[in-house]
Length: 218
Image (cartoon, rainbow, N blue to C red; front, side, top):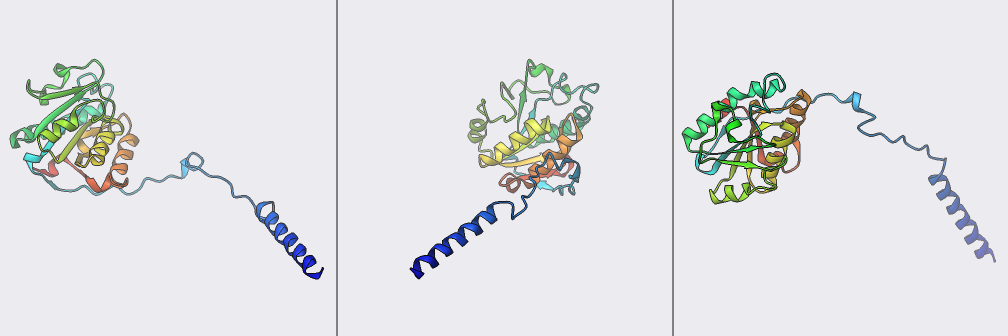
């Protein structure tokens, strides 16, 4: 009888402890999320830009979604400001024998690409793709057929085509090079967030180098 009473008391005590732990005895922590803390976010230090030496035989450059419509000074000044850097990059890439490709969106066609770096008749111009130019196109097959290992990505928008295509390249086993003066967004935050993600995201950051056009050595 004493054993039974002792066991019953112990079970009751354990049940009381469990109730206390799960109930009001421990104050509930207030749930917080990024929306609640939005105003507390401070911009991190900028990523370090790297000097990049590439092998032209195994490198391709893709100029994404830039046309006279998508890159007007009046409506997208950041994109318009990136055109000289992109023109220089295309010029140097062609002179070194780097494969140059383009993508366009909407109703744009190759004649809408700015004349400073216009597509040649033999250049591939991808159409019909979303932000990741590997999806819905034969981009991966083109790169593999040319034994490309490294993809340089420039274009607009930074948080769309550049972010997703550079990440897509990393996920598919390619190395990505992203010149920050060759990517643009409708907002400064869009470009900043893209640079941060490419520099810090798992796997993507290990296979992506942020740079500038004048730091790319062909």
